[in-house]
Image (cartoon, rainbow, N blue to C red; front, side, top):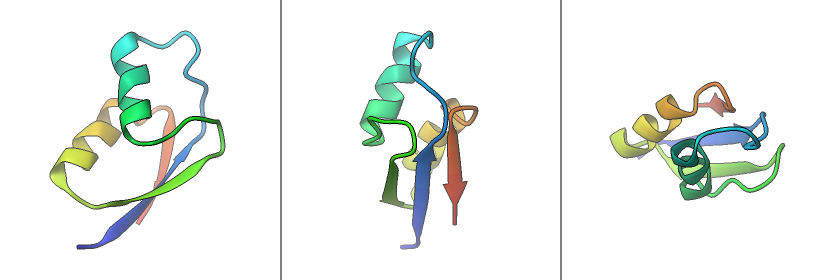
Length: 58
């Protein structure tokens, strides 16, 4: 499977509980942190829910 890089670009402060939990489930804790994940439909769905807070690189 291909890998995608996810970077947290916006703060979790003031966001809904579900959005904060999704960010944590992706493994992101701090602004500017980058994680590498497998490109699966589940990960893509999580990214779609918080697309306004993250930056994705193929």
